[in-house]
Image (cartoon, rainbow, N blue to C red; front, top):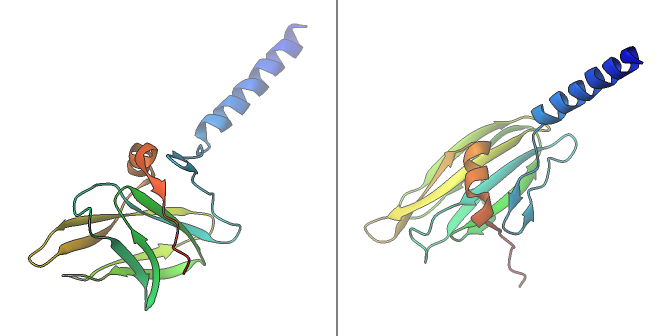
Amino acid sequence: MTTKFSKLVVAASAFVSVAANAESPILTKTGLLPEPQAGKGLVVFYRPGIMGALMGCTVREGDAELARLGSKKYFALAVNPGIHEYSTHGELNDRVRLEVEEDETYFVRCNVSAGTWGGKANLEPSNRDEFIEKAPRLNVWIPRVN
Protein backbone atom coordinates (compact mmCIF):
# COMPACT_ATOMS: atom_id res chain seq x y z
CA MET A 1 0.00 0.00 0.00
CA THR A 2 2.81 2.37 0.85
CA THR A 3 4.42 1.75 -2.55
CA LYS A 4 1.24 2.66 -4.47
CA PHE A 5 0.79 5.78 -2.35
CA SER A 6 4.45 6.81 -2.94
CA LYS A 7 4.07 6.39 -6.71
CA LEU A 8 0.88 8.45 -6.65
CA VAL A 9 2.62 11.25 -4.72
CA VAL A 10 5.59 11.24 -7.12
CA ALA A 11 3.27 11.29 -10.17
CA ALA A 12 1.18 14.11 -8.69
CA SER A 13 4.33 16.09 -7.85
CA ALA A 14 5.61 15.71 -11.40
CA PHE A 15 2.25 16.89 -12.82
CA VAL A 16 2.15 19.94 -10.53
CA SER A 17 5.75 20.78 -11.45
CA VAL A 18 5.01 20.64 -15.19
CA ALA A 19 1.79 22.63 -14.77
CA ALA A 20 3.57 25.32 -12.72
CA ASN A 21 6.26 25.71 -15.40
CA ALA A 22 3.77 25.99 -18.29
CA GLU A 23 2.85 29.54 -19.25
CA SER A 24 -0.64 30.30 -18.10
CA PRO A 25 -3.10 32.15 -20.36
CA ILE A 26 -3.13 35.94 -20.09
CA LEU A 27 -6.45 37.55 -19.19
CA THR A 28 -7.10 41.07 -20.50
CA LYS A 29 -10.07 43.33 -19.79
CA THR A 30 -11.88 41.85 -22.81
CA GLY A 31 -10.84 38.19 -22.59
CA LEU A 32 -7.97 35.78 -23.01
CA LEU A 33 -5.00 36.60 -25.20
CA PRO A 34 -4.89 33.98 -28.00
CA GLU A 35 -2.13 31.41 -28.26
CA PRO A 36 0.01 31.36 -31.43
CA GLN A 37 -1.51 29.35 -34.27
CA ALA A 38 0.38 26.15 -35.15
CA GLY A 39 3.47 27.00 -37.19
CA LYS A 40 3.08 30.77 -36.66
CA GLY A 41 4.29 33.35 -34.21
CA LEU A 42 2.12 35.85 -32.36
CA VAL A 43 3.03 39.54 -32.09
CA VAL A 44 1.05 41.53 -29.52
CA PHE A 45 1.09 45.32 -29.91
CA TYR A 46 -0.25 47.32 -27.00
CA ARG A 47 -0.61 50.90 -25.86
CA PRO A 48 -0.86 51.00 -22.07
CA GLY A 49 -1.08 54.70 -21.25
CA ILE A 50 -3.28 57.69 -21.84
CA MET A 51 -0.50 60.13 -22.84
CA GLY A 52 -1.51 61.56 -26.22
CA ALA A 53 -5.01 60.13 -25.77
CA LEU A 54 -6.33 61.97 -28.84
CA MET A 55 -3.63 60.46 -31.01
CA GLY A 56 -3.55 56.88 -32.19
CA CYS A 57 -0.53 54.66 -32.55
CA THR A 58 -0.82 53.39 -36.12
CA VAL A 59 1.22 50.23 -36.61
CA ARG A 60 2.35 49.25 -40.11
CA GLU A 61 4.37 46.52 -41.75
CA GLY A 62 5.67 47.94 -45.02
CA ASP A 63 2.79 49.89 -46.58
CA ALA A 64 0.10 47.78 -44.88
CA GLU A 65 -1.68 49.38 -41.95
CA LEU A 66 -2.19 46.73 -39.27
CA ALA A 67 -3.78 48.60 -36.36
CA ARG A 68 -4.64 52.03 -34.96
CA LEU A 69 -4.21 51.64 -31.24
CA GLY A 70 -5.89 54.12 -28.96
CA SER A 71 -4.94 54.31 -25.30
CA LYS A 72 -5.33 51.10 -23.31
CA LYS A 73 -5.76 48.92 -26.42
CA TYR A 74 -3.96 45.86 -27.73
CA PHE A 75 -3.88 43.90 -30.98
CA ALA A 76 -2.61 40.33 -31.49
CA LEU A 77 -1.29 39.42 -34.94
CA ALA A 78 -0.48 35.89 -36.16
CA VAL A 79 2.57 36.00 -38.44
CA ASN A 80 4.80 33.60 -40.33
CA PRO A 81 8.20 32.91 -38.80
CA GLY A 82 10.99 35.17 -40.02
CA ILE A 83 12.08 38.79 -39.80
CA HIS A 84 9.34 41.42 -39.55
CA GLU A 85 9.78 45.18 -39.36
CA TYR A 86 6.95 47.22 -37.90
CA SER A 87 6.73 51.01 -37.97
CA THR A 88 4.76 54.05 -36.89
CA HIS A 89 4.55 57.34 -38.74
CA GLY A 90 3.95 60.75 -37.23
CA GLU A 91 6.09 63.68 -36.24
CA LEU A 92 8.87 61.10 -36.07
CA ASN A 93 8.92 57.64 -37.64
CA ASP A 94 9.87 54.71 -35.47
CA ARG A 95 10.65 51.09 -36.30
CA VAL A 96 11.06 47.83 -34.44
CA ARG A 97 12.48 44.71 -36.05
CA LEU A 98 11.60 41.24 -34.74
CA GLU A 99 12.88 37.82 -35.66
CA VAL A 100 9.75 35.75 -35.09
CA GLU A 101 9.92 32.03 -34.38
CA GLU A 102 6.99 29.64 -34.70
CA ASP A 103 4.86 29.00 -31.62
CA GLU A 104 6.39 32.01 -29.79
CA THR A 105 4.68 35.20 -28.58
CA TYR A 106 6.32 38.63 -28.80
CA PHE A 107 5.19 41.86 -27.16
CA VAL A 108 5.65 45.38 -28.57
CA ARG A 109 4.67 48.45 -26.53
CA CYS A 110 3.61 51.68 -28.22
CA ASN A 111 4.16 54.84 -26.21
CA VAL A 112 2.98 58.24 -27.36
CA SER A 113 4.78 61.32 -26.10
CA ALA A 114 4.27 65.02 -26.73
CA GLY A 115 5.89 66.46 -29.83
CA THR A 116 6.24 69.89 -31.41
CA TRP A 117 3.27 69.56 -33.79
CA GLY A 118 1.68 66.38 -32.55
CA GLY A 119 2.48 63.24 -30.64
CA LYS A 120 5.42 60.95 -31.23
CA ALA A 121 4.62 57.25 -31.33
CA ASN A 122 7.44 54.99 -30.19
CA LEU A 123 7.52 51.21 -30.67
CA GLU A 124 9.70 49.18 -28.36
CA PRO A 125 10.08 45.50 -27.55
CA SER A 126 8.43 44.49 -24.31
CA ASN A 127 7.98 41.21 -22.46
CA ARG A 128 5.31 38.89 -21.13
CA ASP A 129 5.59 40.06 -17.51
CA GLU A 130 5.16 43.72 -18.45
CA PHE A 131 2.14 42.90 -20.61
CA ILE A 132 0.58 40.80 -17.81
CA GLU A 133 0.92 43.79 -15.47
CA LYS A 134 -1.02 46.03 -17.91
CA ALA A 135 -3.42 43.37 -19.29
CA PRO A 136 -6.31 43.85 -16.81
CA ARG A 137 -6.74 47.42 -18.12
CA LEU A 138 -6.35 46.63 -21.85
CA ASN A 139 -9.18 46.18 -24.35
CA VAL A 140 -8.73 44.39 -27.65
CA TRP A 141 -8.58 46.73 -30.66
CA ILE A 142 -11.25 45.93 -33.23
CA PRO A 143 -10.87 47.37 -36.73
CA ARG A 144 -13.66 49.57 -37.98
CA VAL A 145 -15.72 48.12 -40.79
CA ASN A 146 -16.48 50.62 -43.55
